[in-house]
Length: 175
Image (cartoon, rainbow, N blue to C red; front, side):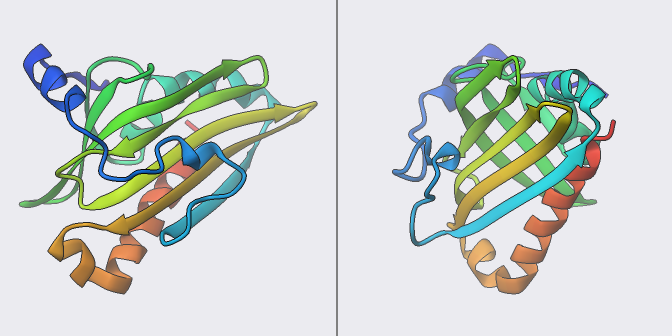
């Protein structure tokens, strides 16, 4: 599966939107902002998985293997925009995000994106593959809070859905 390339008009429209939260870039900080639901998850990987997992991450393949439809302005890059879709049958939830941070270093590869208007929650999520010596891990950090009536009403069900998608991202790191 390959991500769908977003048409230029939609890309410009999404890039013109203002994020739905003030704490842009904070998902990569040591301390996450108060007032949000926080997710921190880590999956150990084999050392030889570092490069291919980093490549998969920067080309949206982790998201696709997690079961999301991906329509993006291109591979992960600063200010790239993406429309993610998840759900089953007629219940499809769109999630629009902008990439707010990208890192491509010898032992650290990943990015963070933040929510745009129309996303059911407000906040940010970071995905990183890290290597320390012969150890490697895939790390996800997020902070969010519901913005739509449906997301607020979903309560524990919404949190369970978020956990399930996060579990699927982590499982997708194995290729």
